[in-house]
Length: 123
Image 1 (cartoon, rainbow, N blue to C red):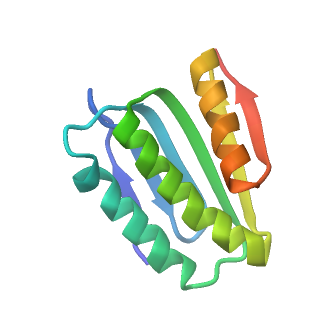
Image 2 (image 1 turned 60 degrees about the horizontal axis):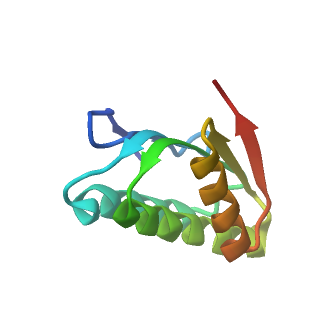
């Protein structure tokens, strides 16, 4: 399975999903004009990847800013991974934050999904 890599720009985050290692990263600000166009390919990639039954997945999320429509897509992506985690226990969720709002968003997702997040502060 090919990696999914999307360069960061002023409205969209950097994305690096590597099937061989199970590492998934999304970093930066997320304010795309069309969130479906940006995030749907990520969700499709994850759905296809999960069909390969990977033994280890690490998702690193580090947002500077997340608008409301992006937040809904991030939740959808996390739901896909959480469902896999419920049955396999192979997913590590790392939530990086430098602002209180982003920290709160991570805790909100954690409570909705009923999975354990690692909260990592950076500056």
